[in-house]
Image (tube, rainbow, N blue to C red; front, side, top):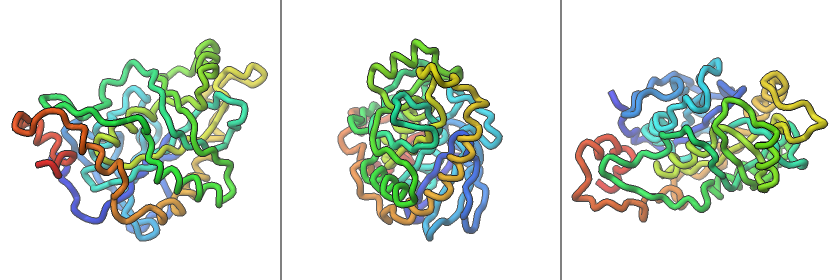
Length: 293
C-alpha cells in the first residue's frame, strides 16, 4: 500500500547522514515501513516524540551505511516524510571544507547550493503530464536555518550561518584539480547528498535546512592528508554526538503551524492546466497536490 496523508499535527523530519543512524531522546519510538509510488525509502522510519513534537527520523544511507549517494531513492525518502505530514526537515550530512576558515567539526548551515551532479535522475516529482517549476533562488528555509544557527551557537558549537554547498556525485572523493576548481569558484563546502533533497522538499512544500558537519579539507590543502574514509571516522562520531545534542533544542523552537513561504511553494509553480492533469499522475502526486484537488 502506498502511504496516505497523516492528518495529525504537522511533523518534523530528520534525515541523518554519515555517522548518524539513530537519534536519542525519542519518546514512544516505533518503526514504520512506508511504501511510496517510487518504492521504499532508504530504511524504515523511526517515529517518536521530542520536546512534545512529532518527529520522524530517516537514516539517509540506511542503518549500517549501505547505500551510495547515487543509489539513494530521494523521491521515496521525501515522499515518505511528506506522507506522514512532515512540514520541516533538518537534513544532516558530512562535508569537506573548501575554505581555510571551516575547520573539522565546525558546522556550516548552507544558504545556497551548486549542483555539479550528473547521475541524479530522481530530483523532481513532476512529469507524466503535470509540469511544475518551483522557485529555487533561495533553496534553504531562512526561518529554519535561523533557528538552527541560534540554538547551535547557544550550545557553544562553532557554527557558520550561510555559505555555498557544491554537490558532487561521488562516491570517489575529489581529485586535487577538482578540489582547487571548487575552491577557486568560491564554494564553501562539498558534499554528495544536499541538492536532491532540497529540490524535492521544495516541491513537496516542506521547509528544509541543512546542517553540514565538516570532517576534512577535501584534498586541496596539500599540507594535510587527503580525505579518506578512515581519516573522517573520528570526526563523524563527534559530529553525530553534537547533532544529538542540538536537535532537541532546535525542534522545540520550530513553529507549530506551517506558514513559511516554502509551505506554499507550489502556488505559482504549476504550469499545466488542472483539467489536463492525467488521473494516474494525480493519484501518484495526491499527497503533494492535495490542496489543489
